[in-house]
Image (cartoon, rainbow, N blue to C red; front, side):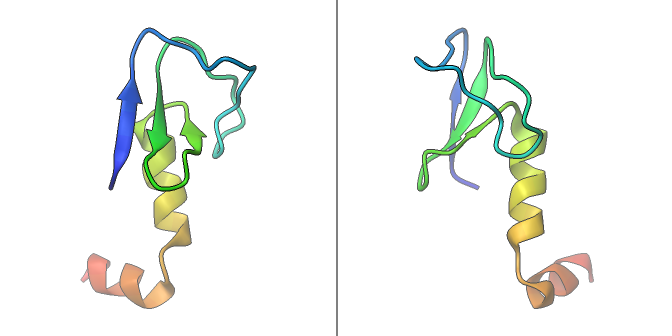
Length: 62
Protein backbone atom coordinates (compact mmCIF):
# COMPACT_ATOMS: atom_id res chain seq x y z
CA UNK A 1 0.00 0.00 0.00
CA UNK A 2 1.26 3.43 -0.92
CA UNK A 3 -0.96 6.36 -0.07
CA UNK A 4 -0.93 9.84 1.40
CA UNK A 5 -3.19 10.66 4.35
CA UNK A 6 -4.58 14.19 4.16
CA UNK A 7 -6.01 15.51 7.46
CA UNK A 8 -8.17 18.57 7.96
CA UNK A 9 -8.25 19.46 4.30
CA UNK A 10 -10.72 18.90 1.49
CA UNK A 11 -9.90 18.73 -2.21
CA UNK A 12 -10.27 21.95 -4.21
CA UNK A 13 -13.20 20.66 -6.25
CA UNK A 14 -16.13 18.62 -5.00
CA UNK A 15 -14.62 15.11 -4.90
CA UNK A 16 -16.06 11.68 -4.22
CA UNK A 17 -14.50 8.46 -2.92
CA UNK A 18 -13.56 6.16 -5.77
CA UNK A 19 -14.92 3.08 -3.95
CA UNK A 20 -18.08 4.11 -2.07
CA UNK A 21 -18.94 7.35 -3.95
CA UNK A 22 -19.37 9.37 -0.73
CA UNK A 23 -18.39 13.03 -0.85
CA UNK A 24 -14.95 13.62 0.66
CA UNK A 25 -14.76 16.11 3.52
CA UNK A 26 -12.30 16.69 6.33
CA UNK A 27 -9.76 13.91 5.73
CA UNK A 28 -9.07 11.49 2.93
CA UNK A 29 -6.49 9.19 1.34
CA UNK A 30 -4.88 9.69 -2.04
CA UNK A 31 -3.16 6.86 -3.91
CA UNK A 32 0.44 7.91 -4.60
CA UNK A 33 0.65 6.26 -8.04
CA UNK A 34 -2.76 7.21 -9.48
CA UNK A 35 -3.71 10.22 -7.28
CA UNK A 36 -7.21 8.74 -6.91
CA UNK A 37 -9.10 9.80 -3.74
CA UNK A 38 -10.62 7.51 -1.09
CA UNK A 39 -12.65 8.60 1.95
CA UNK A 40 -10.71 6.32 4.35
CA UNK A 41 -8.26 3.43 4.60
CA UNK A 42 -11.05 0.83 4.45
CA UNK A 43 -12.26 1.95 1.01
CA UNK A 44 -8.65 2.08 -0.19
CA UNK A 45 -7.99 -1.47 1.02
CA UNK A 46 -11.27 -2.84 -0.40
CA UNK A 47 -10.61 -1.31 -3.80
CA UNK A 48 -7.08 -2.70 -4.01
CA UNK A 49 -8.21 -6.12 -2.77
CA UNK A 50 -10.87 -6.22 -5.50
CA UNK A 51 -8.24 -5.36 -8.13
CA UNK A 52 -5.79 -8.08 -7.01
CA UNK A 53 -5.49 -11.02 -9.43
CA UNK A 54 -7.36 -14.14 -8.29
CA UNK A 55 -4.16 -16.16 -7.81
CA UNK A 56 -2.74 -13.46 -5.57
CA UNK A 57 -5.90 -13.44 -3.42
CA UNK A 58 -5.79 -17.24 -3.01
CA UNK A 59 -2.10 -17.13 -2.02
CA UNK A 60 -2.78 -14.36 0.52
CA UNK A 61 -5.69 -16.30 2.07
CA UNK A 62 -3.62 -19.46 2.58
